[in-house]
Image (cartoon, rainbow, N blue to C red):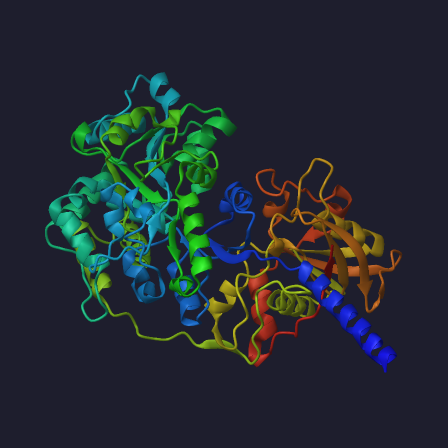
Length: 618
């Protein structure tokens, strides 16, 4: 009897030991998911944030820079803990208000200049979105070209128009704008009339527009906006705009400046810094001009807007951790890390960002706080492009443009709901579990099946969210696949497949790490592999298996890889260029990954089931 008891006790102790060993691998870290408006936030900011909060387990997801994307996540009950978005307006975000925390009583809100934070206040007083440091948009001038021809840099609108006239007489272009882009059309319209938009009438109209309801849409007013369109018409005439300028893109505009064919272009202060650093050009920022120098303004927009999921209030420990993260984001150091050497300004009173030399000609605007925050609702982008391009082509003048813009603002639209492209019967979680991300695995398995390769590897971050059960429109399918996904394909030996995986996993001799964050762990299809987690954010590749057997280094496999080349290879990101021997064998394919994915699901086809593609040990 004693032997039986002793044996049972030993078994219990062994089982307890196993359980405890398993528990030792878990952590008590608070898990926080943060969606990033763009990969630029991963240059310095996310790495810095992880270093500041070692007790937080962050998941950083590079999502899509549109409120429609977050509205879709909201409707599916899948908002992340922290949201960032650049293309933002209260008008667009209104549907999400009930799901976001009110930050109006926090210390962070108290750090803002009232002028800027009031743009984000709802009628009831709540503030749910906080603007990060200001990107500055205006005119970029080649100062040397002005000096070469003895033309003074403008100080008001009359001087700007005169400079354009004189350069035109010299056979050069005084000013050029990339009117093919919706944001350039929108900023041209608003930039021409900032003094009017910042009057009491202008700010009153903006408040009414930002807080419109579905039952009472707000069109253009009859005081400020007719003047705005008259000014735009004058500006288009003075800058000698041509119908073909509706196809002008940024690269063509940039080349005109760099080649000395244009004296001024529209651009940001960060663009201006790049022209100086990379191209050696003596560029300076100029403002959007008013009738006098005292009416000049800089057009700004937040690097991103930040909001918190209201569900955080149900978990006090997690809520406290997120609030600490929020305070760090809006600290002076947080601003600098998000800016990542770009030339930005601050909306916060307690943040001192060094003013870049490119602002030398607009210091009066900065010192007097003449920083206009653009109105950037989704419909403002689209309607501005339509109407401004029609003015450029001569379809109509200022009065007709005003009436058309107003009509489009108050239009209820066609009321047509997009058709479902497919209906997914089974959902898969995005979260990285014991053997990888089920959702990412399902997507990569599906892409490999559609492409027809033996093996497939998804690197950087291949998806942006969980796979949800239910209907998907074409746009929703696009949002599921990460932005800038490229496809490379080729024939590799097993030894080269191993080298490819080592490139995507192992830390390089110079310290470069291709796995900056855990959701950058490669997602494989057709093969499984092992990783050793060193506990410091670095990993080492272990064994690779294909069809349950060790990888045959002499066999030849067709391989497809999906991901953002720049994110892995560029020095400002992971700084891990692909080995030259592999680069020569894996050719870029002129196939749109979104199209490939939609084709795979056409006709009601389902995603391939996920597989357990990785095993991680310590």
